[in-house]
Length: 241
Length: 241
DNA sequence: CACGGCGAGATTGTATACAGAAGCGGCCTC
DNA sequence: GAGGCCGCTTCTGTATACAATCTCGCCGTG
Image (cartoon, rainbow over all chains, first blue to last red; front, side, top):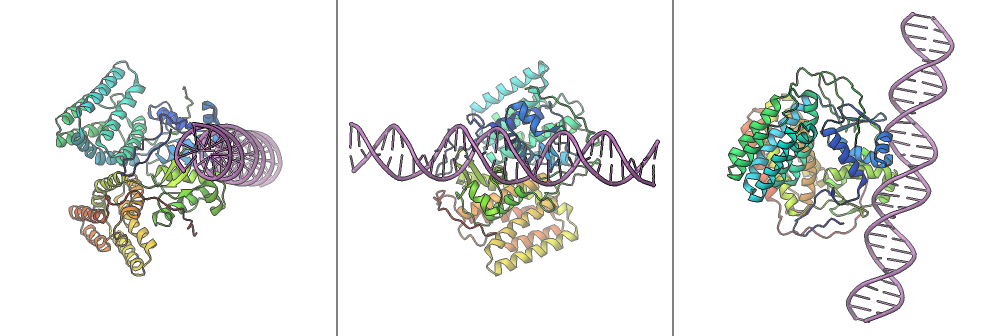
């Protein structure tokens, strides 16, 4: 399948995640998923050989995936030493959340502007899935869905560039929560998600933005950036696919 | 991009440009520079072999560089077809500038907050260099310096994550100006840069933000997003290193 | 004359081989 | 016994070889 570009700029440029038999991206996505839902702890070493063997691909492919993750800030590459799951410091954590506080209210506004009923159904279904995962104690899916909610909002907002930025920020947030989260579980107040949906449905931009700020503040207040020293060096090996 | 993490959380996150004999990054930077200052036109094909020969490296290194540029939105990769200098459509262009209008005022505010006299000197010197390049008709350097001014502001602002995002946005802006710019030359009203510096020196956050918005609007108004169809493209070869 | 299939050439996708750097342990020295 | 030096091992960095896929021109047919 090809990627079509139209003259008027209606570029439907979705990352070729779905249909492309792009092995490197598959590995990248799998690793990102594993990092985001805390199966791979910060500072875990990602040896090229090891990862390659796990996915049945050569180091070439793995390297491409790791470089992509590095660009997204989920992995740090150290020359001649290898790749490690990122372990953001307190300062970096603050900057990530500052960036989110800047971007997400604007996204919420845009979503309210662009809102159509179909969005509401999708978002509500999403929230139900979240609730279900949370109730079932399925922490992995709860975390993933919680982040995806914010991403879906960004998609509705319509600015694909901001959406991609936010994707990075959310992924990194997940790392940060893994390192500094207090409760860890109540990652994202799901009720707040529902409240935001209501504001969108009412096309109330200001309210949507305000609720988003409040929501982010709640997530932020669940962090303890002081107490936790960057983290020692646990070396775990859990790549259960 | 290497990330050094200290135990106290003081993350010094320097691009490994200077000391690292990282060939892939060198190629990436050279290509980015060539794209940004319009030596490489949008839609130009970047053949791996060709680029590799130009820099005297193997395709392995080139591929890494191209993938990085693709992630930054300066290059589009098409599977089994190769890499091309990106040719953003009108919609994408609007999104880039919308993102800048969102991020840069905040950066201006932060810069005003963090301002110390040393910054003023650096920025004024930078402006002088801009003026000089402009007067000398050195379009390449004028464009580059004009963009770098915004980046320096982001550095002063202190949020490295936003600074990196902005770096991407500025690079892409350069592409957009190449495609849709009317005058093309008055890329960035330099006087507006000076005005912003004054606002920073006065630590007047609101004024700095307002001036920044105005500045971005001016750049934006120099674009003609309607008229220009993405543009067909020749194959030029101007990689003067 | 137009259209569609087909094959040669070119270009990318992936694997593998080799070279060089970092880490580790043993051994020697003081 | 402690510390430092030097080899080995393991890993990454880079180049290259081979396979898969696409492009484009050619030729045959309707």
